[in-house]
Image 1 (cartoon, rainbow, N blue to C red):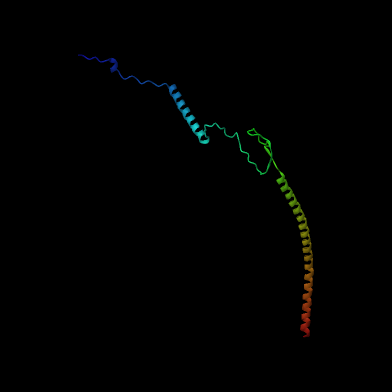
Image 2: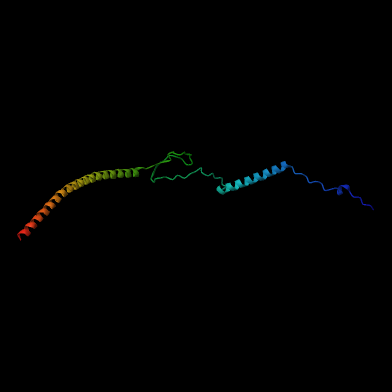
Amino acid sequence: MATTVNETETTAAPAPKKRNPVFIIILAVLILGGAWFGISKYQHSLHHEDTDDAQVSSDISPVIPRVAGYVLEVRVKDNQQVKRGDTLLVLDNRDYQVKVEQAEAALQIAKSSLGSAQATSSAAFSNIATSRASIGTIDAQIAQANVSLTRATQDYNRYS
């Protein structure tokens, strides 16, 4: 029996299909876009916490006063929107007013003490000037006493 060989089987293998360059470009763009999206989500998750209770951050800020005191009046309501510079409450200033008056009294005492110290220092400078002037007089008296001593010593030696 004679076998017949199919001509299609004996022919060379078919040439591989050429891939469409547009398909490759679209696939590369999709892969790069997915990678970029994934990286950006990862970066965002490093700095932000996601919760399921849907709270929004920075809508409510704590108020920390710079001074302590009793509150006389509250000028805002709960959850009222405010802007920088708005007066939120009024504090009792009596304690601070007393401190200001005490500081002013201490200033007046210091000023009067300064006047008295200046008068004392002025008197001391006058005494210094007088003492310096008397130093010259005393030096002259010492010189005269030395001369008298020398003369008396000479007289003593001469008559003894």
